[in-house]
Image (cartoon, rainbow, N blue to C red; front, top):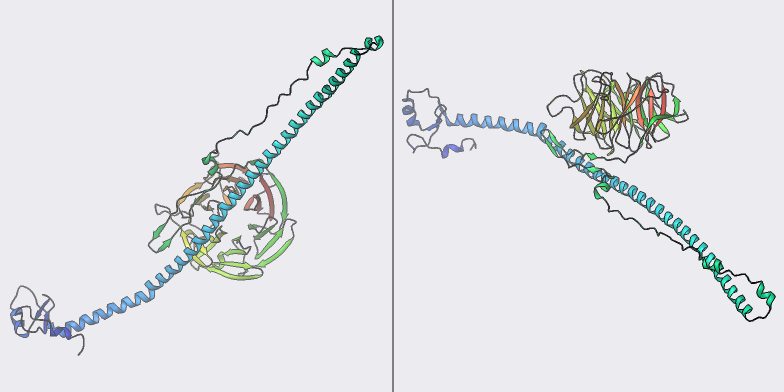
Length: 510
């Protein structure tokens, strides 16, 4: 028997409560036997639609089958793939969490080693001071000892001579005696020595903790379309390292480009450059080209960055892609057809941050990638307003030592700084002391002190601001003309490229 009709064996008439009900009123939702149908129709207060129960069950069955088909289709094609994607994201997040924890541990150990080194240096210096004071003390005592020993021997000799004279009758010998009592009565001055002591100071635990970067609380946020665990923001407290009042120009390189669009430090002695052609070049500080790489599209790249492993990545808005260069091999890392990549940077935890604009130029966002997998998208502030301006234009970015994401927004003429979780921290539009001056930032980089450097093409200067957006210093050496792209090496030397194809190396810390 068809399972659709097996319910007839148990369904009873709602009126007589006895006979099997092969009929059903769709209006009253009432089961009826054949004898009670006419009685049901006698109720003229409403229109009745009585159908065979088989028809009702068949229709209901087909409706349920349609629901099952739709549910299966949505589960297989939409919901299940999203859960699979979420599972991959969770796996990636676990890996990244482990890597980030290892990185924080390594950084803390490095800070500890540096502090231990400083303490050992101080101890060695104090030990040297003690050794020097000990030498001075010993020399003074020995000098005093020599004076007393000499006088002591002379007194013993005078005593022997007097005893001989007292036992002689030689008048001439006695007449030659000259008394030295007055000389010996004047004893040598006593040596007064103030022995040094260690002036112990109570260790100020709070001051000691300031030598380390502190961790903000872990922020965990759930999102409707996924699950993200932003990295904790490091409240970085750098040691007091003074800036030069007048930064010093060290080196000047001619690259051969008419215009330079980006530079990236591979090491303290080697920099990648790209400009208004399709060739990216690696230079040493002698101006020699070590490597040349041609872009895949045959057009100039928007930006370049060096990964932690030393590979080169570059963005190409013309084919909406980001490429990885390893040795002489180029492979496509990311392609986003609806979005065009602009500036990019490699992060401390080996992610890739990219600032993108939509194809129509109406939207901009920062995207974090782990390899080719998107991990995070940053586009809106807490009020749902865009963090970054719309319209086609240049945008570059850099990750700070405290994991903040610092973006130069050319269209808006400002530097936008958000935390690693994407929360707006501040916008910088120039120092408060010069409110009437125009500000047109272009390049951006950050250093080991968590300071942010950005080039201002209007004023021909480079602004240095701290991690909280406070202005610190201008770099405006006469040798710098039209500064644009920036990067710093491991020693915090600044490399500046201008639109005339020159690269300058500048020292700005003492």
